[in-house]
Image 1 (tube, rainbow, N blue to C red):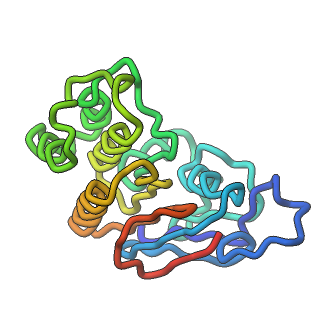
Image 2 (image 1 turned 30 degrees about the vertical axis):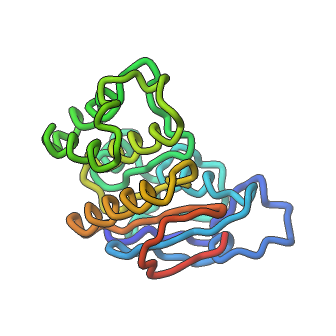
Image 3 (image 1 turned 135 degrees about the vertical axis):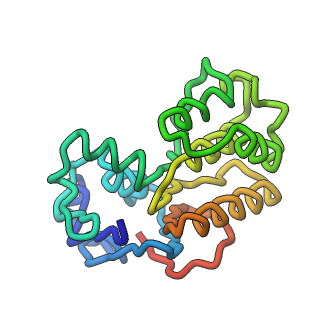
Length: 214
């Protein structure tokens, strides 16, 4: 997949609004593989909805979303599964980790599906993010910032053309934010992938090709 195209897309909950000023909603927008984007938003403007529309978890929008030239609404369940395993990875704002499982088990669940990374590679990421001592700890006992780092590792253990990260560093200090940004950018470069990051304030320091206001 080389492009994600939004064509006059708008959350249906906003259909009656006439005051929307956005670089994305009701516009023609193309995200290109290999480029890095920042989507800046205010709370309530549809930031997480945008990610859910692209990944196919929600369809309550008007307009169209296309992957290259294929309408996302035309994909069947099997095609959506393949897309999420091989083409688009999403770091959810709410993380969606399994609290009863350990940090490593949360990552391994995905890596067992994709077979994409070795255990040694995963362990190096845990070490780089300062949570190597938490690999065997249940996620429910970890802070939200620690959980964000686990969720980031999980998002990277698959092939992808685009990585979506919804407020990925909201609970991280500057050092861990920088480490996570470097890790994300390095993996995206390795795969020739695009990055789309959303933020309502604090955001990763990356060389963005384009900054869009939601």
